[in-house]
Amino acid sequence: MKKIAALTMVRNDDFFLGKWISYYGSLLGKDNLFIFFDGEDQAVPSCTAGCHVEVIPRVAGNVRVSDKERIAVMSRKAAELFSSYDMVIGSDVDEFLIVDPSLGVSLPQFLSDQKVKGNSFSGLGCDVIHNVEKEPELDKSLPLLGQRHYVRLSPRYTKTSVLCAPVQWGSGFHRTRKGDFRILPGLYLFHFGCADTSFIGQKLQDTDLSSRGWDRHLKKRRHLIDDLPSLEVKSWEEWAPKARKIQTWVRLPYTPNKPSMFGKKVIVALPERFFGIV
Image 1 (tube, helix red, strand yellow):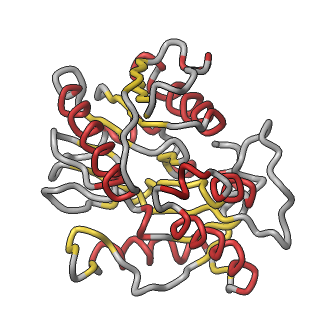
Image 2 (cartoon, rainbow, N blue to C red):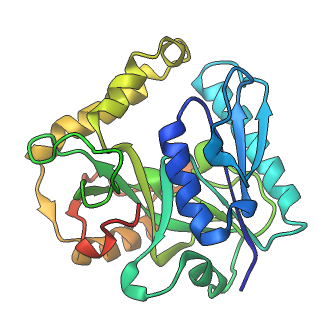
């Protein structure tokens, strides 16, 4: 079995941080989790006990500048970790790499079984979206999957989440500076930033985020929620393989190592086998 670490950076998001630690800690062990707090003005929550925690000075600047600075920190740390680890998972706190339960293997076993070709692995991007016409507000004491049933198969979240060698990530883990995507069949990256209208509403009221240029991005997330009820819901079993194939071969012309789906909004219903995982 390969030795695998996971790292993230967080600012003022104890809810998803707790979920992130619970999920990856149960799979990898909390002693293999590395958490960076962006800003010394934050209190470190008790859920981080047993993890490696570092509080760093606030990464200042607008969203583009600060994203580049944050990912530079993550890339440097990942490079250091390869002296002790075979693979390093990098993700935001609201993102979770999940192996299809039908395969019957854990995430570390699944990754250990892969033949390493290139410097990174990707899971197919799954943007979990709140259907406000059919789903109530989240009960945060319960698992998220099962309360939410609809996913957009999104190339934006088909990220180079697993490094197999020291390499520079692009902002937000969306790509690596060298090498190409290898989207593994059976592996998915679930993003929960659109899983409840309250998540977006809270961030839109955050004056600090607004001053740094986050409003446009957050409003796009809100539009995804607003548009969902009018979109056709397709079959996961049919479209997950299709989306993987499309994203493997179709790339944006100005960033050839970023996948695309021709702008298609493919919404699928999540199979019950995923319920309760996060």
